[in-house]
Image 1 (cartoon, rainbow, N blue to C red):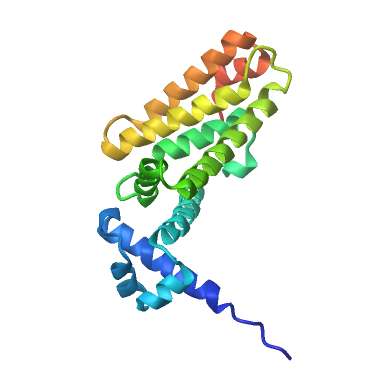
Image 2 (cartoon, helix red, strand yellow):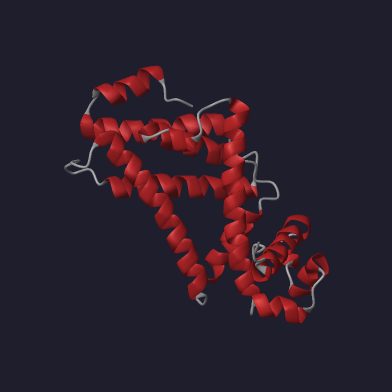
Length: 223
């Protein structure tokens, strides 16, 4: 019987990314270097550059790893609170859970935030960094837009739900930056309520108190 083929390339790349994540988590992004990765991965410089020709290629892989770890954090938060997972919610209920998870997530030592801002600072001369962030933000924006459409309906008249989705994303991004600089900048629970109130107030001004908005205002969302 043939044995399953071992993908050595995949294993080595994962080892390198694991080492890079450790360097950033333990020493900070400012100490991220191929030399430090070599020590952690116990590989030579030639091995590193064989699988990742440039340090920036490793950063892109690490960025994706941090995104995966952030999604795991959200799942852990849901399990701790005993609430339905985000993928089992829809519409405004899911949007509110996303807002709650983003604002409640610890920012101390968060490598994703540090790497995201590093990418932003270099997009003028790193088209790959720009493309990765652009794709990520579009993915988030599209999911928010889909939930708004599911909640309100596609025929929204003068209300541009994509712009509303972009605004929600921008608010969360800005609040995340403030918490990264100062974890005590605001109370996540209080801020969560404020952000939701702003969204509902805007929707109320466009639609009036329809049944769904009344239910959310008077009974609260499933958070």
